[in-house]
Length: 143
Image 1 (cartoon, helix red, strand yellow):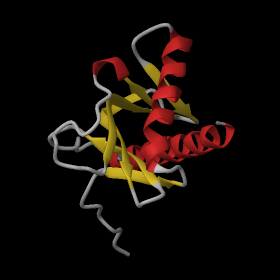
Image 2: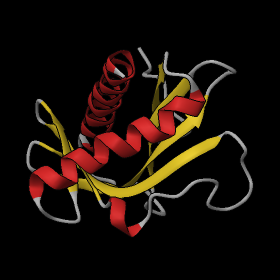
Image 3: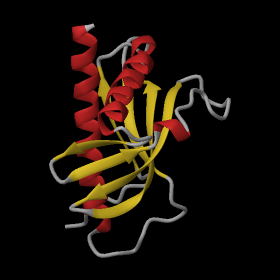
Image 4: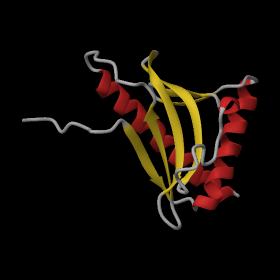
């Protein structure tokens, strides 16, 4: 049986958080993580998946002027099982009028051609995106 081949290396999850609230909530979430580590980087970990973000080097809104749907972009690196998988960008976007979307986009020119790389990449991206979507939703309920 043939496996479906993804034509993109962008992985995302929808969040019930309103787009106008999502940006400030993500900023708050990342600020808390930066203060906990006392560095300019913050890590989001879930199981064997981890993304290390560098918010001080580039939280941006509408960075290229192209998309009115883009709320935030933050550069970082994705890890799985202690292996550094790839440079990624965490993106927070407007999914609809009342929902947002959080995702990870591969920033390498071409994905590595290593055995099992895609499997680990997608598993790590899904875990991180699910975790962040849940954290944003939980934070929106508390505020």
